Image (cartoon, helix red, strand yellow):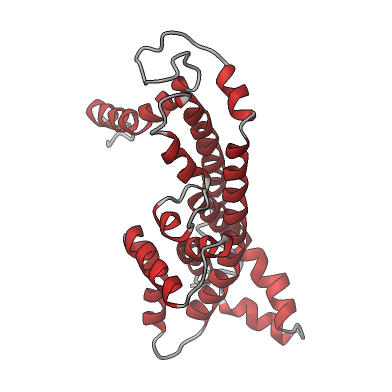
Length: 268
């Protein structure tokens, strides 16, 4: 009889792979407490909590954090609306060029970020649009829409059309059908897609570099701080915040989409 237990070699390989991916992240947490303020000395000469107070007192950190949060929130809201509408159109309707539209929707996340950034910067310059909060939002929304779309279209395709037909036959209008039938079935997919979109927007660097002008989101601020000779542990404290802010939405999205292989009314 076949055993469900993985062989020892596979377990070791998996452990080494996880260690390779996550040990550098653990180093960030360690260096946030180091007493050395100019270099990344290993092992740290001592441990201290003073860098948390220093970080808390720096207004430039709060400005960058505020900008990142606002950009991520607005980009996610735009992505939820556009991604859901695109997913509904592609999954529930049949029309000429449907597959081409689907490809165009997911193309921004498949392209290298530098290509998207150069394209957006060229478009803004050609249209004489000054760099602002909204240019960053437009840049982030291009790939946030894809994340929401992929989650929503997969869920739409698992909803039986008979549910919608039954709702309409019973006298519900389009809005009532969406509110009471469609939305409950796609809610967790939208929430998961929104969480992932928020996490991607919050730590985006490449596209932001081409669309921010003189503004600094938190990741851009971190890159510039790394070249400063003093107070480098401040960057690691901020990095801890970025890890937590991006990790929690991803973890939430995982739990929300787990066990959703079937939805109400799914038919064969």
